[in-house]
Amino acid sequence: MAIQPNRRSFLIASGITALASTRVLGANDTLRIGIIGAGGRMGQLLDSADKVAPYQIVAVSDVYKPRRDAVQERSGGIATTHGDYREVLDKDIDAVLIATPDHWHVRIAVDALAAGKDVYLEKPVTHTIEEGAVLTKAVRSSKQILQCGMQQRSWTHFRNAVDLIQGGSLGRVVQVRTYWWQNYQHHFQREADWTSSDRPIDLQNLDWKQWLGNAPDQPFNKEKFFHWRWFWNFGGGAMTDLFTHWIDVVQWAMQSDQPSQAQMLADKYIFDAWDCPDTIQASFRYPGPNSKNFDVIYEGNMSSSIDDGGIDFRGTEATLKVTRSGFSVYREGVPGKQNPILAETSFRDGTISHIQNFFECIRTRQEPNAPVEAGVAAARAGHIGNLAFHGNGQITWPPKPA
Image 1 (tube, rainbow, N blue to C red):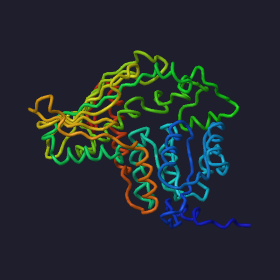
Image 2 (image 1 turned 90 degrees about the horizontal axis):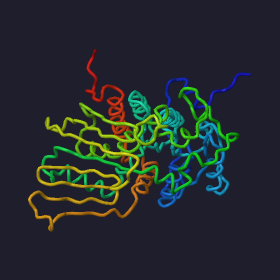
Image 3 (image 1 turned 180 degrees about the vertical axis):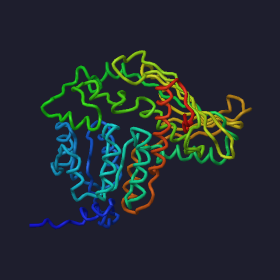
Image 4 (image 1 turned 45 degrees about the vertical axis):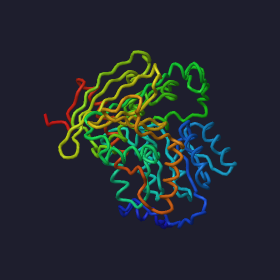
């Protein structure tokens, strides 16, 4: 007996790999959500979602059973649990939230779009530069919404700061300094959740092969499982975990989405077990509007958290300093006691507003605040920095033919 093709299998076989969501949502309808990757960041996304709109977790996938069980409990026992993310995509859901390790991002997102699901994809949206074109094509050839996890794009004071910069309030911006200092040693000592060596893991309930995905086969390693961002097979270190947030704001404000040159000096001074460097100084040259170049600097390490993270836009007329707490503007020539001349404080975590924007776009079908092109460009800048590090410390982009 021949198996009759359903609509999805017919369209995929025909080469039309993106199904539009057929459920028309009213303003008060409860969104039906699937969860893929149920670790710490997903918990933060769900905490934010709780504050913005009615939604129901329908299904959850994670390779580690205790994590998916925790999300099922959070759903009130309603969500089905799955080790394979593709089973979530077969459910009657409106959208998926994806917060897996980086090396899974594009594959899962592309499959979700093909299944007719809207997507919230955590940053960095790509694990390699080449994946950027794949993800962009998948989004733009579909009718689905994809929100990249660049929450500054929905954070009110970041949006206001960008308006000031683009409006010319700083004069010509010639240099932008970005920085992010964190202290993982302090975290390890203070929070057992961060301490991989003391954190129990039940290997009977972990599908390690599935977690590895397309990464090279290798034995289970607890440090890699908990701190995967710092291993090249699964993440890209600080350049794609931290810098990617700040360079997204810079590229957005300065209206330039790709550096022409990059240099990176970095090393492992503290965390020898990692692949990725824990101490970094990097610089990038960008082509600006009207052929006016500008430079971007990144500094950071993982053993000192004083000053945390932020961005300084230095212009000929004024400097704007912005962090996740707010921004201040300092005018050139104004006495210190009268500075800053303008300041704004953050009143809401940007992740809340970003999830809210995503949920609104599911209903309205409007472009989200962080479209695929922005996420791809932000990740690309971090990848270019890492390419410079892996080479002779510098790179011209795009690379010149040999």
